[in-house]
Structure formats: C-alpha cells, structure tokens
Image 1 (cartoon, rainbow, N blue to C red):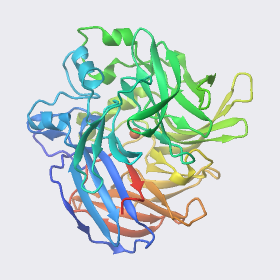
Image 2: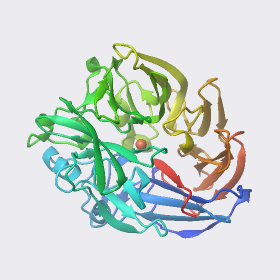
Image 3: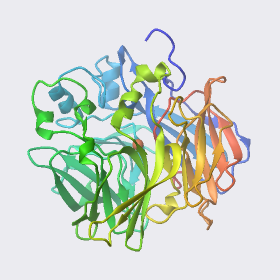
Image 4: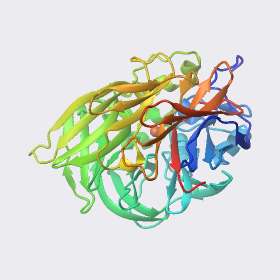
Length: 468
Ligand SMILES: [Fe+2]
C-alpha cells in the first residue's frame, strides 16, 4: 500500500503507557479497567493482511483510579512473530495458500492465535479470545502476553470456538460452544469455572455447521442461532482447495435460520424452530419471560457483510453494506412448534451491548454504534436505544467515529441506566482518539480524555471493576 491508509484502517506500531489528560469530570465511583481488543496493525514487516478481522491483536487498557491511565500493547502471538519475520500467513479471510494449509493454520494442528476479538476473565485469568480454542493469556497489570491456554481434558471439544462467551452473572460460570468438524459434525456446549476445567452441557449433531459469531444465554437455556451460512465439513477438509477460511462457507437461504434451544440442566435440545433466513454477528442479550425466550439480536439480510470488510474496500471508503438492525425474537417454548415472532427494535446499529447487570435477565436499554442504513461510512455516533419505546438518544460530538459503547453500572445504583457509557472516538482532524465518558441516563458527555495516538477501529471491550 503506497498511499497512506485512512485513520482507523492504519497500522499503529507504538506501545505506550501514561496518564491521560482529562477534560470534564469522571464520577468518583468509577474504578476499574476497560480493556478493549482489536486489530492494532494490518501490516508488520513486509506482510499485510487482506481483511479487517485479520489485523494483529492489540489490547488497549483504560484504568480509572484517580484519573485515567492508558496503555496499549500487541499480543506477542505466533501470528505477531510471523508477521514481524515477514511470514504472516493470514487467518480468517486473508491468504492464498491451499485450504488444507489454511485449515491447518486456523483450526487443526496449531490453531490460529491472533486473538483480536475480545478480552475476558475466566476464573482469575485474563484471556484474549478469537474463534479458535487457543486462547492467549495476558497480565492485566502490564498487558504482557503470558502464553497460550488450550483445554486438553476429556470433555467434548471442537476446533472452532465462539469468541463471544456468555457469563451467567447468577452463577459466575462462563458458557461457550465449539464446533467439531468431521463425518459427523457437532456443536458442543460447555461451561467453565476456569479456563482449563469444563463441564459438558450438551451437544447437537449437525450436517453442515454454520458460522456463528455469538449465541444467547438465559438462566435455563443456551440458544444457538444457526444462520444459513454453512460449510460442508467433508468438502472443507478435502486436499487441494484454495482460499481463505471463511470463503468455504456458503449462503443457503433455503435452510432458513434455526434457533437451537438447549436446556442447561439436562443438555437436551428442547426446541429447534426455523424462521426466515438472515445473518448476524452479535446477540445483545436474552432472557426468559414466562414460557417465552426473548432474544435481542443484531441482524443483516445475508452474509455478504463479511465481503464488505476487506481492507481494500474499507480503505477506499467503499462501505456499501447493510448496517445492523436490532431485532427482538420471541420463541414461544410453550407452543407445540415453538413459534417465533420477530420485530424490529431499531434500524441502524453495530456492536450492540447491554448493562452487564442485565445479562441473562430482562433489559430495557441497548447501547450500540449508530450507523446509516445502508451504511456508507464507519459509525459516526453511539446510541442508547429504549427497547420499550423504540426511541433512541444519540451522541456524536467528540470525534468522527465511535467504538462499541460499554455500559458500566454504578455499584449502588438501582436504575438500569444508572452508570456511565465508555466509548473511544476517533478525531480525524486531530489525528488521535479520545476516550469519552457519557452519563448512562442522559447520554450527555461527562468527560473526555485524549489519547496520544489514533486507535485503529477495534472490536470489543470489557470493563473489569477489580482492575483498579
Ligand atoms: Fe464480535
């Protein structure tokens, strides 16, 4: 790439630690760390990746403790070392080598370790995650990489892991699923108290596994939303095929979308209603309402959005894609066929989140990046959506583009939106990013803290109150 890529799709190479200047007032009760994860660089050495999802993992930590301390660091992964040595061979959607080699690299022998999706705490360990079951542990005080963590016990496991685990706040368990490919493929659902111990919840046999980036959890159920974007596992494993990992998935709208409902207690598949075909990356939250399961999910019409996230297109400003639509699905478990209702809550969202105090229980508010519909530009606002009234508050000052908003509840608050929303804005003219603290109720600005550099567009953050 000879010309300078636009900010957001640039490569950030510096790693810094320091106190940020704060304008405005951060509430005294806010204590802990926001850890965000995403691609930090798309080129390193002589190698470049093709797809936004394949940028090299970088953690950004904002610690609130009498001011704000910021640090950022690349994960020192095999992917990072290979890129530095000019040998990076891609991952999700980058690369031209044979599919068999791609699969070996991504899911078979030494799973891809460019864990750039999110950071989670499992037990007392902090891990960066991607879509392989090979997690990367980091030191939450320094962001230094500690090494790989991979389950090797006797419970059923798969080769493709979901990056978006769900925590059950009532039990503290982390629940996740993995996909095992083979002559008989299966989704294996499990729960964890620590990264190396797992309990099998249940498994579902499947002819053609789907690509599912997240799933839904309620106190009694795990729901896998099986979009009709599927792979033939035997074709997938055949020698000689060319191309990136994700190119093996096919859009098969005639299959519709199936909600696989597993009972957590028994592991039984208690319902599997089918509805219209659609695709999505992110579930916002799910809960039980008498005999209904209520699932808030961001949808797009089909899986074409993956193709819109190749860097060449993004850097050229060619973002001719559908933004997400926040939809509410209601699965009537009490009816014979577990009928599904669907309604739009809000059109024009990306990366929806809810208060962590509402995970697995009824929520009213969803926070998200605000997008045009269809999307012509990277999200230029953040929104607070009221799922009851359908109204939304928007914040768009402080920068040109905004990251996923993260709600942090006030420890002794009772109202759902009593707390703050943290987002990182990118200011194009100033050439740097700005941490923004919004009031959870009014969605107005409380404080901002400019960073010493511009952060490339990232994926997900988690707030860890214990990291102060
Ligand atoms: Fe995600």
